Length: 74
Ligand SMILES: [Zn+2]
Image (cartoon, rainbow, N blue to C red; front, side, top):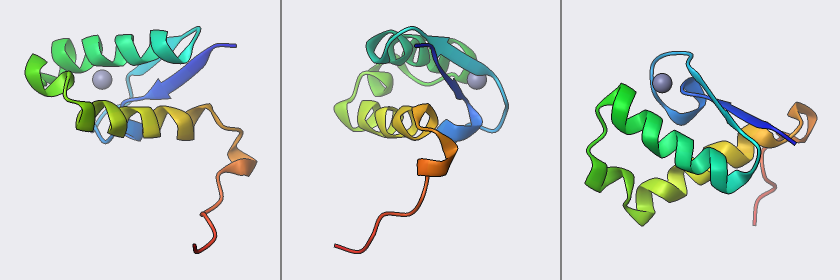
């Protein structure tokens, strides 16, 4: 199943789309895209904190929209 994420969903102000066949693949593509197209420093792109942010955005995007409801309070 292909996953597609827009740069907008990742917090970048445009509507590029990055897609890949798997979670790992798209994460790698997002990393590369952010470095090449958005001038994200390579060091930053490999920080676990940054990867976590992208992973969260990808997870949100790969979900059907009806499942995109706010989490109940814990
Ligand atoms: Zn972009």
